[in-house]
Image 1 (cartoon, rainbow, N blue to C red):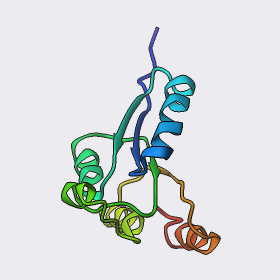
Image 2 (cartoon, helix red, strand yellow; image 1 turned 90 degrees about the vertical axis):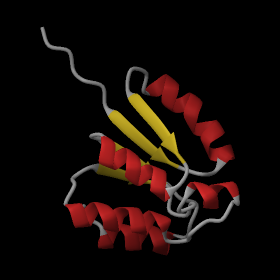
Image 3 (cartoon, rainbow, N blue to C red; image 1 turned 180 degrees about the vertical axis):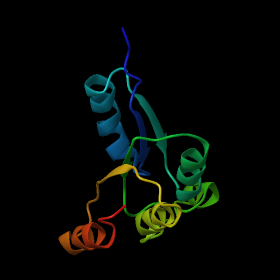
Length: 116
């Protein structure tokens, strides 16, 4: 009998209030899956380089580096930069974008990265 491997999920989110709401829900609803949380682009890229990720839950606006994270400095296009990197390496991974940004930003992401 074969046992399915857990789904590896990367959550890229810098908002502590959002994480406080998300983490218990994910822990309950996705029990048994491997979930990693990062809050900046550099950390997200490092995780993606080190291991196979099946699903990314991606914010749009977040810090680029750990130093930026400490200073609460965010980049309005960090989510786009993450998706640009994925498209360059032709890595296929499912991505769910969560953001409180205006609808136009979500539409732009869908159109621009539909093949990622």
